[in-house]
Length: 213
Image 1: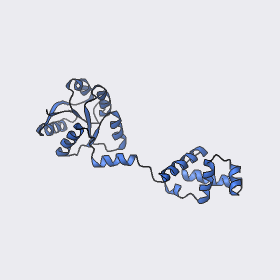
Image 2: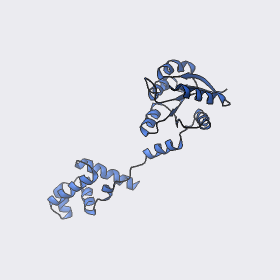
Image 3: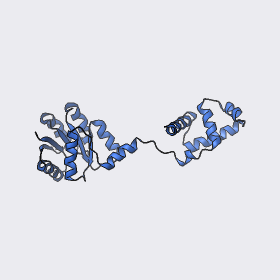
Image 4: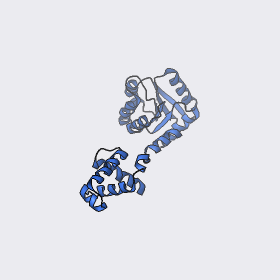
């Protein structure tokens, strides 16, 4: 049995090219073509293809919303986004909607067929640069130069703030005056770009957790 593919793409020449690539590949068959989300939502549940190639930028309803609606009605169908967008916002919106693959439109015909085969087999094909963006989005942001520039004394003050100590208690513990504690805390706020004690402590704990990990 061939792998059946439907295509949702508003650019007519591009739609024809994609359909031609699919139909020329052994073991694949393009079973329907749709120029907008509305017609795809109406027709695809009755066609029930194995894989849907979905553009994001469509007239009217966009491709992400189209996937979200169709995935509820076609849980076994795999949706492969084929788009010009490479930003993480579009990528995660598509994946959250139910897409399981994401390729950029400059992919070659060979890459496209390989991606369709992979997604049909249970994989999640992504262009290497897209996969890198996804991985990077889960990596902790490095400390800013301002955060790295905290002095030893400021770190001591932050330690005591995190323990819930009052300004006077911090002053007594470090053998400095309360106004000096206030001065340290003001500089800490500026360096960490925060506005309150709770924000400073939260940022400090986050940075400490990253260092421990």
